[in-house]
Length: 394
Image (cartoon, rainbow, N blue to C red; front, side, top):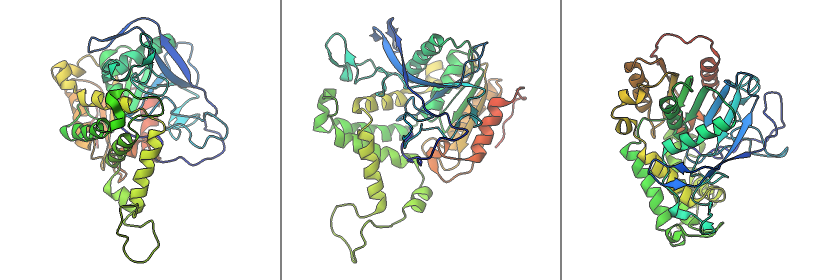
């Protein structure tokens, strides 16, 4: 769900603890890929980045799964003067909570995305034009199966862990379900076992903003064009769900953009929070494809582990991994009780699972922001040698 660029990381020189300069790579699967829907692509591409080194046993890999508007660039910088390091740069690097001196970290832009991976903006080889909405419908399961093919290509024999927040947490859980012997640890944060009616409703408003924009043209629009107004509005509304009332009030309050005396009876930007949201919308349309937004939000809507496997107990029955689920007190998009439900279901299924709930007023975005408490929790979970008995603690 969360936008890696929302918080505008401060530019700083590379230092110890930094991954440094990185470059994306492309994995191309040449064979046919069958989606959960039954639709087939003749092949696909995933853009990805790696940090650290794969060990001799090829089992020290950590898969980082991104959220709705994220991508493969989760650490390091693409140029020495890059002002925006990867979206989880505060977490990943030598000596950091996800220590690249010890682990081989992989992050891929999901299938259906628009940052180098195959998606609606990709060219259909049969027509020579972008797929648009003729691209196969994508589910979270399709994303996970595509990433498993990437890991096989990289020669990874087992995942030390898979982790992510929000949509990334959904992917992490599915790795443990679909590839149980392959996945040793799962760390899912600010996530859910199924998309709630409220979350689906927010997604639908965003999709309607896009599809009601005349420039959407039923998904057929040129690169750099399309429903820019609709996509910006969708982004503005979604961004509100990623933060909390307290964090918005602390950052903006009712401060106004103008210093003029008296009231301004216009619909121009008056309050700082309005300018902030408009900025979020404008920056988003410069890097994200509207059709990908439609596809990925629909994939989120369809996510329901109990429905897909018969029950949560049946969904988690194959799991062999040790799991840590983390909720955040101020997250009202995927609130703590939804995260707690996952941990309880794992425990009821006899699995090794822990739950932690961190007190924060930063909202759904809490898993992205700097937090020593969160770093300590993640480091301890990833680096301990022996798994403890089943634990449920808050």
